Length: 468
Image (cartoon, rainbow, N blue to C red):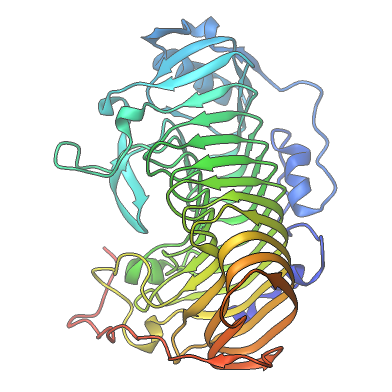
């Protein structure tokens, strides 16, 4: 799968932006060009249509439900050919609203959109939850099969905290995310702030050509992610300040035979110039829902200020299948981690699917993890990289130009073509490098450790799997 991917060459050129197809829309304009590196599409001086939600009856008093008025403004903009809908200063209480094609929703500096506390205000449809398509409530702001859409600030989006959390006996459907485009192309999210916890703030699924810039995301106080990129292509996340309970950013692509059969890959993702803090899990999680594959991810020029586990956690397990490949991390600063800087756990992370991918086919293929110009301060563990399956070793691990302080060094297992160089860390006890079944360069002086314990073999199902 991965060997035929011609796009991966972009990761070999330092500082090169993500290659994507141009987005021919005045709404996305130069922001999309920043992802693609193409010439910006000229934008008109004013949108085709400029509407104000107040003119459609929105009160903005914080108590009146303004759902219908806001939706009417967006729908009117859409049927007139597209343009911009303004939310002026005020506190707008609203249920779920749908963005339509060629429409930009703009929040005034003093505008706040606040979700209602009523589940009935959030329509039910098929949504992704832990890598599976299930019935659930859509996000506060959502879109389905739309193109050239956007949400820009400098206002604020607030979820209703009472609606967060996992499905339960009282509310068994998946709870609403904050912003959730499904199957859309040409998306722009820029210059606003969010406040929501115990659920995801931004969850694009099956989307392409996404620009996420200059967001301030807060989801502390509960188990909620910042940005979940779920089976999406051509994504730029830039200049964001993210402080969350669960992962700041999570990259996913489905779970088990459903995700493996659909094979909707998350690929071509650039994360740069961002600041991360996480109070429950990792700052950036890649996986563990990887059954559609994850490839071509570049993380650069970022600051990791706190992580309750690891700054970067690459995770999967047998039963997922597919691949994780071409992960490049360059020029980052890491402080305040509780567990360590980097972990890859490819043997037992996340829920096993009810219908896993069986046998060796279900062991994820992993290749080309590159880390360079890493500066760490007082991390407990530099690298925990022993949870790799010997049947499918990590093919290519680069760790170069690393400096700072750590309490424990690097542990690796089942890796070929490792390249370690210029690792200048101090403060650790025990060996700097511990290995089992590792080949490559820079391994001099390593001590040998026991192999990792392997999980049980995933057996083939009694009946062949089919979607349905």
